[in-house]
Length: 100
Image (cartoon, rainbow, N blue to C red; front, side, top):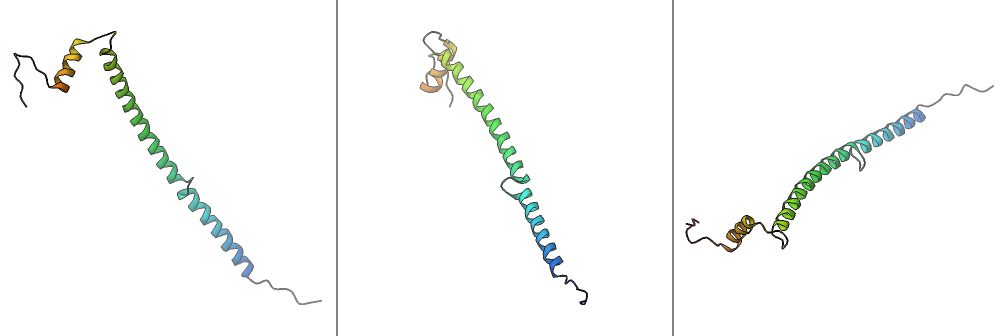
């Protein structure tokens, strides 16, 4: 019969290198890739900031809607009208002193 066959370590080294390379790639992709952990944290932070901005804008819209209603033809708030005339037109009563 023939001599016993000896295996070289080259196949094991190549196998280990391929497995190690794939493991490193997938680990990197799961942490810093487009769908990784860091990107997810960044997206969640942006979503929180946009939610807060939406709440601020909704409050501003509600305030402007209220003022618009109070200055409409069907309902007129004289105090608001006086305030707007003073701030926009720079009007003052005859008995008032205006300081700039």
